[in-house]
Image (cartoon, rainbow, N blue to C red; front, top):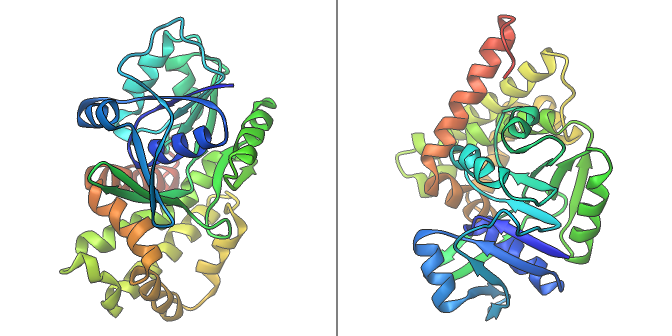
Length: 294
């Protein structure tokens, strides 16, 4: 099976490495300094203290006739439309969109072609130490790789991830899942941006309580619009007292998990997170007033 990873940031590099190590024929499409690094040094990863090079092919262009069984699209939300435009001319049948966005998937297929999208979201985080990837999958209990049901093509994706030992879950309504995800991660990112000392934001008890309350209010607003919270464990944020959730958030913010999977991304991609902030609260306002929900 031939796989293309479109985007060579943390997420694309990690999934590319895991898929290549599982025996798949993996190509990674990169640009700029990341392209230079991969061309010169290859895909170098750090895992369990060991640094090694993973065999992949590095691409600086995608030709229309280059056909891949799966394309993993791992770009930022503000790069999504340009990437789909580029893939429109390519003959690969299935694009797995691992992107944080509130747009509907028919909008994306209007750009790249009908029947090509499997909406998904990665379960991973980390960063680079120079040209060495230091990243990991999130624990299955917290957030496995998530993707939506389509026309059966999700079964092929599930088999690929299983072979690569990448935990996953399939949800019936990926758009609802994305809404609930943003209801949580937008206030978390906002907390870092509001903190006087973002690296130690978890020490600010008042800020953690404020963040807990905002998450609760966001999820309650989604539920009030007759949308089932996904996954169901999101109900915990609505049922537990705000001071308790704030205390728990403080511990998570100060943990190695918080550093790797929350702090690094929030501080690396403030423009993307602020755009998602605007999208999410605009959706809440429009759906409250009876306007468009997108």
